[in-house]
Length: 137
Image (cartoon, rainbow, N blue to C red):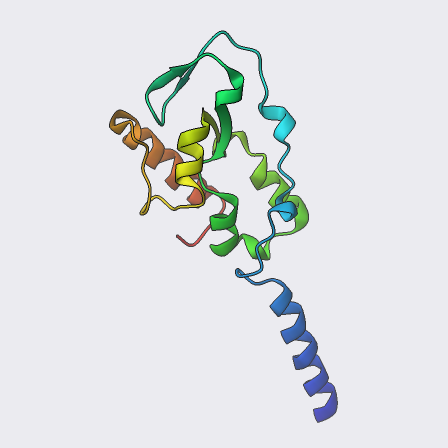
């Protein structure tokens, strides 16, 4: 009986080790980049407070970054839950490439938009997503 218990513990540890917050792989989240492209005349970026006229100057940002969500509990999600999170329109926002890349995978404690008038809205959306997905921020 002890042998079976030891084997069970070993299997449990091996399985658990594959679901680690340190084993982040962006591909696990299956974000559909094609959804983000739209035709428009101009677009206001709330992060910078600037207007953009070329779609190539913009990117879709995950308000709560995929890698951060992974570390905060997303590593335990099923593939479908990861895909749902990655494509949740409540967590997506179209912003300038510059702002998106300066933010990277930073949390709200490390990064806020340059446009101070958007801080309150950004904070509300960030906290909403954290709560919606029961992430441990």
